[in-house]
Length: 213
View 1 (tube, helix red, strand yellow):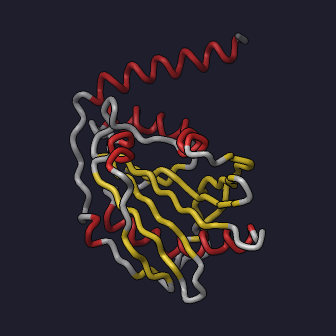
View 2 (cartoon, helix red, strand yellow):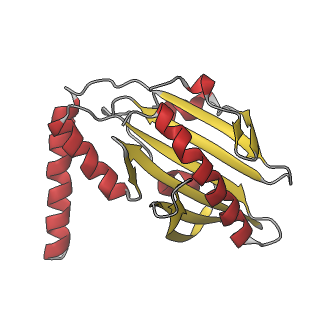
């Protein structure tokens, strides 16, 4: 193992130890508003609430969650999933889709970052993670990010670091994971990305009403 990797591994180990210690004292932070009130109409998109099997929720360890399929007037589909953790104690921490998706048979063929323009202010943008998935002859585009204490986080490592910092300085380890999926139709990946970005721009102001800042 190189010296650089040894240092990184040591930092992660120490950070984890600190995080575990302080998370035992962290407060349980509730949602601003309950997810059952989440709007089924977002911009031009109309949603229908769905649910995973209970076994999936058991693995995720979420405090609360919201899953829905949204459709526009053209029949295009965006699936929205929000997982909220009021305190990320052991066994109740956010899972990265980079680990979960391959387990369900989807192969990640591309990973990158996308800029999302916030609705009403073209000068403000956030970065989110984009995955291109393939399974047999099917393709999907995924956009996701982590959200905590008013931050939009597009890195698993940064999410962990912020969780440690907030546990120590604020006695808070709450956080959320937002994931959107759209199928690639007729091999038109750009259209799938456009649908996801348009939906996300409409979604961001709503999330602020529900997720604690």
